[in-house]
Image 1 (cartoon, rainbow, N blue to C red):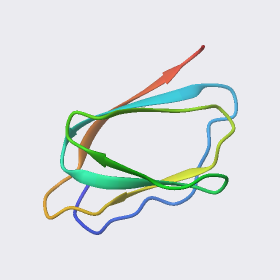
Image 2 (tube, rainbow, N blue to C red; image 1 turned 30 degrees about the vertical axis):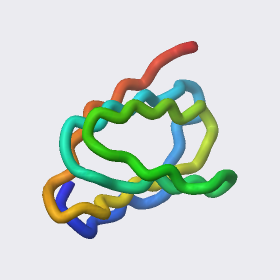
Image 3 (cartoon, one colour; image 1 turned 135 degrees about the horizontal axis):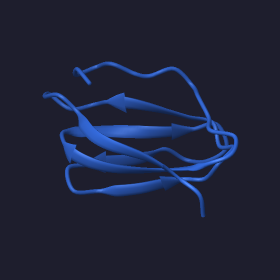
Image 4 (spheres, rainbow, N blue to C red; image 1 turned 180 degrees about the vertical axis):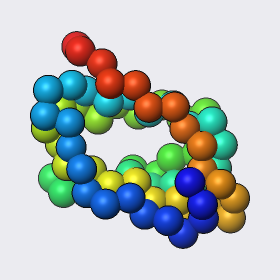
Length: 71
């Protein structure tokens, strides 16, 4: 994801989402909670049904692996 790009709000109704940050820095925004800053090496779990949006706040590309999981 290029620097300055922010994804639109979205949610996954039936699955949690696990995010593993490979490179860069960003912020995960939530409609129902405080934002969380992310950097290379971080892992974040977003529960099913939570609206969220991801923004690349760094100077380089943001790369991550996204898994949808059943918990």
